[in-house]
Image (cartoon, rainbow, N blue to C red; front, side, top):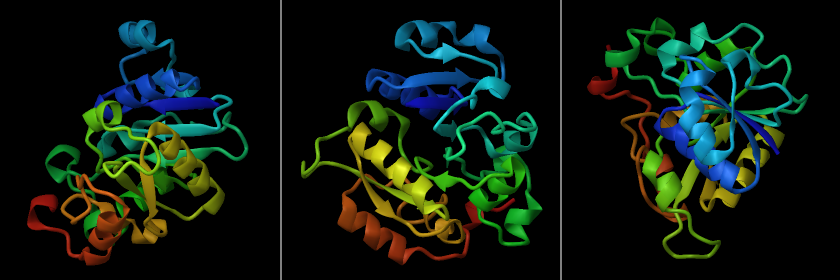
Length: 219
């Protein structure tokens, strides 16, 4: 599968490592240019590209950049992607890093709805509460009692199914966390955020979430 990854930090870098190891054709981009991704490319076989090229022909695109960087992504970023592209949003709102975003704090938009508006495309929220190192260290086969589960939210059922199948291939279970309007249940400060647990515990944590954002996650 052709996969584009925009952002080569901890999550983006480790997804590049795992997805290339699974045989996917991965293009990876960052804000500093493809020449700065030479070591990652040599390690993994991924193709380093500019952000504007990362989605070209991709069936899955992973956007894994700080929220404050989303408005600066190239216009028409997804124009060259596959018609049925699934866009994974791993983002979290940290006002100490991102500055105050009124649409999230005052208007009540979920982080991923805000990201959708800037991308002009529906997204699937996943990996936002996952420890990056777990992507490398914690894959387990189906049925293993230690297999971790990740919440996945989105409005496009076909795209959500694609993402859940990809996560399964990576060695993790998934739990349907509802729509993007429901995705506040997996934002920072909620019980499921950073939870290392199986399906039952992840479902329970999602159910226990409160829509009131903790003071630490408000500007």
